[in-house]
Image: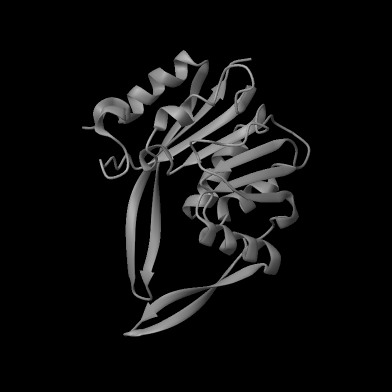
Length: 219
């Protein structure tokens, strides 16, 4: 299974046994072209997909509209294209794409059944601004709802001041994040390393391992 497929399956495993069809509302923050958001329509009646970069948002809208998108991929010194199709079994009409920064999400997004922070915390200037929206009154995640955080913990001062790195770097991110989330009423229900393969050219790929945690907010 690919990375997005595996993350969607981790979410599905935490749904109530025998739950009928797609139900509830999900949010994918920094959704990119929306592949994961589209996959989640198999389990949720509505999915919000926010993305700060307009060009990535346009790719997602094309994928939603046409069911596929042409992606440039270098091949033997020339520019080639491959067509990437929307995930099989998804219902693209259930996804709402909008341009929004992860550190300043729209106020009307709150009390959601699922929030996914995938490749977010180490990519923003203030991870505290993202974490501060998760719990509390009108928090992004409703009591009993799920939070998925996936990250390679690639902190760099080009993106985030060192003083704001969760855990301070050096391998303590997941544990420090856990302390923050537990203080906000979240309980870890699953943790897994998930490999992700990113195509760079027709015969060249980049790989990384994302540490994925699934958390449930206390009732």
